[in-house]
Image 1 (cartoon, rainbow, N blue to C red):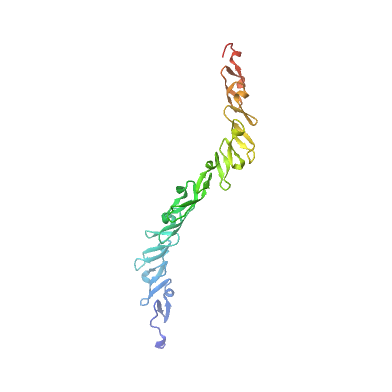
Image 2 (image 1 turned 60 degrees about the vertical axis):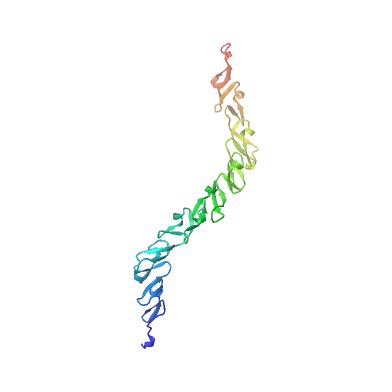
Amino acid sequence: MPPYERCTQCVTNFILTNNTCDACSHFINQCVTCNQANNTCDSCQNGYFRKSSGTSCALCTDLIQSCSVCSANDDAGSTITCSQCSTDNFLANNTCLACNRLIPSCLVCNAVNNTCDSCSDGTFRNNSGLSCDLCDSRIKNCILCRSLNDAGTSVTCARCTNGTFLLDNLCRTCGEFIASCISCNVLTQSCDICALGTYRKASGQSCALCSSSVENCATCTALNDAGSEITCDTCAANTIQIGNSCVTCSIYIPYCATCNTTDKTCDVCSVGYYRGLNGGICSLCSSLITGCT
């Protein structure tokens, strides 16, 4: 072959092999710059490191999981230093950690400055991304919120716990909004369940005392959404249920002071009377013993 047809040197980052100039990456996979004198790699692509004295490029993740940019610490490439981790990982002590390992509750993090970009539900980005703090720590009973500024000094609540509702960026208890309400509808701001001793009235706009509808009624149930009719479930102490009414002991059993609401008998009669017929009546003491009071 004439001398002018034989290549004696290739341009930078190409290696001469069998009179052909091949790019570094063709001769050594993932190689960016190479040494033409000894056919070795000087630098590898991001995500790879120089190994075995430059004869190959190996993945950073072969030695450090989730590492995206690294460099070899020695010519052999037996150890490496990681300078950047893959998305959603933090670099700490030459190790790539998942976001939530370094910052609890962090979902998406910035691998460059080791801060959190997005926190999990129930927490908000605080201290310029250095922490994810509970919504409840800023707004009591808040379970979903977000920070309005980088410092996390201003937080807006989007959802409250069951039994509370959102009003003016505060999670208020149902009872604050509707007296005696223990469970309310956030969307309609109405009461779903009223406390014991009260019933749902006016389509949930209020909770009314059972005794306001049926005298001496302790617990009751509304028969319609308006709460215009109720059924009494239990009567107050020392009253006896007759149909949907609660009558005092002395009305059901004359001269009875305290009675048993279950079996509708008298436990204690008024002074001057004694319990007779298994509590069914109260009779005058003088009816048995003359002059006894």
